Image 1 (cartoon, one colour):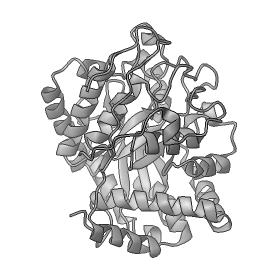
Image 2: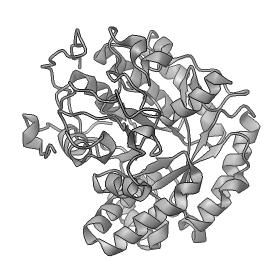
Image 3: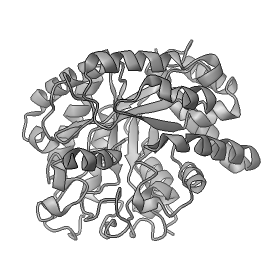
Image 4: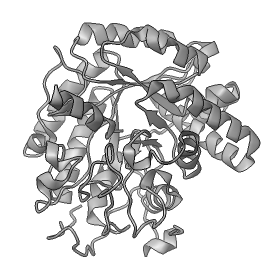
Length: 417
């Protein structure tokens, strides 16, 4: 395994403070069936330009807010703490009541609309409201839910009906950044009004032109903004800023990038590696641009990057999460998985998926298979109690999530201002 330290990446990061989604492909299969860095000229090109690292201050809170986060954390039970680190799916056509046992019984603190909701704004608004009402002191410690959707545009748009149709990212990438930001603000305003406070977008993956449609998870579906890292970074920035203008949080994905793989990690465990990705790859820059623009979350891929970690997929890699993402590139926000039921990681026992991700420096486990939530919560809470080192990582992760939620007004009595 690559043991990551800042020194192992060639230089210290100069941090200058400045101001979650493969699961959509699983849904997509069902739907379709019923500042500047050079771009490599080839997928295996050597990239000498290093991405410009930026320490991520978002979500940011005042010292008093940080103290409030500590107080909120202390008031949670071990199971409630574990529940803050899990996100479950509500499938299209399901009622909010179907998540009641998961939120109230397993204390899960985050959810995702999934499956292609065509019922429209009124139904989603009502559902979001009912779900937030379930976030009671007994269920989540009174801490509000992250209510997420996967609204990239094109074929990956989980909320439809009378929600505005969003063009593909490949189309968005041809727009002037000011126009994209304005458009994203409009799309975000619809989400905000419907009670959706997190968009698991934008896609920061760069797909080389010579791979194009042969890239199974992104290029095949026009989910990328383009093939040039600098241009993709500008689009990622504009999309993120527009969502923020509307009051919607975002997650850049799928770190450290799946634009050069061939297989789709949702459905395959072969052909899901990027053999040329390094810690100085220009393809990392759009991710940095995303959190610099305000994205509070980064979604990990389940692909493999042998030059970064020869032994683990990205979501289980301390070298990639703690070493590269946090130490080298300076991200201080919340790290979320791609769907932990993806074929690329399914050989790992479910409980181990949870503990390995959190042990590697991650924060929120996303499962599209909601009935697995009790097992995930139990694995987190029991391991945290029996293993002090893991317990300390859980505490750090829960406080990261609470810091994010404080910045979003979801922690009673806490304010980011």
